[in-house]
Amino acid sequence: MIAGKCLLMCPKEERIRREKERRLHFLEVNKNLTGVTESSAILAVKEFVRSAAGSNLAREECLRPPLVLVTTVDYLIRLTDRCDLTWWKVYQFVDDRLQSIRQDLVIQGCEGVEAIGILEISVRFYLYALYRLRSDQHFDVKLNADQLGLCLARLLLLYKKSTSHQNEAEFMTYMLLYNIGSHDAVTKVLWTKHLRFAICQLLTVLCIVRDDATVRKGLKMNTLYLRHNFVRFFKDIKNLSPLSQCSLLIHLDDFKRTALRVLGNAYGIPNAVLPLR
Image 1 (cartoon, rainbow, N blue to C red):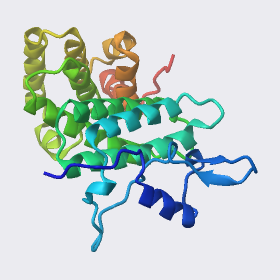
Image 2 (cartoon, helix red, strand yellow):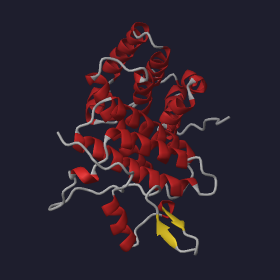
Image 3 (cartoon, helix red, strand yellow):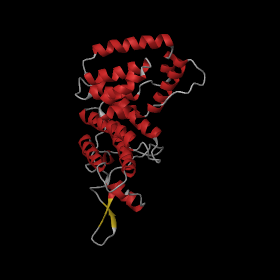
Image 4 (cartoon, rainbow, N blue to C red):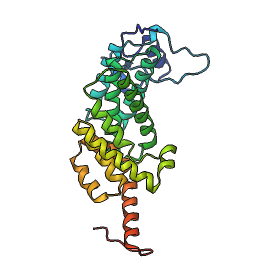
């Protein structure tokens, strides 16, 4: 098992190399007394590097132990509160550095409470980004969704390996809502009228069985969606937590189109004009 030995947010070797190559991010530098921009050991954060032939990402002196990674994540999240920068620029920096942190976790095989905490913060960050950057032309929803999906999948895997965790219900709900009406191949195969009714009945039972109110809300939203009860669905969105609402943002346009299609079928009139108010 590899154990990291770097006690800084960015290994000194990398910081010096990127300074020579002029690849330091503006959030990683400061000005000295003479006004010259220089790198800062307390501001630089290890960047994400994809594995390639001939590269060794598992060097102990370049890997940060779990406690350093937790401190680094806390620093990155504090950057999101800055008001002197556009949130898009902060997002780019934090997104890249969070990927680097998860990479260090995987290389070291970290699966403890530190890894779970880091993944939970990452999921919340990407969910909030869906809302905060929803109208930003530079924001790539697909790339953000990819990172969110990776974090959720890894987090739920670690939950299964641990006995219990106080935030498991919260993130199980995010998973239910973010993947509502999943478009993966299995769901597409099962998406028939008869099996859809069976799934609705199963979700109804699960709503009763599960003890956590938050998870029940997520299951209920899935039930309403599967039953095409869009009137109640859009009313109940208001009762969800802010991040749970963010989990549904990526699907709202599809929901609205489906709701209009259902109304069209209900009217039974081809090319029917439906009131939008």
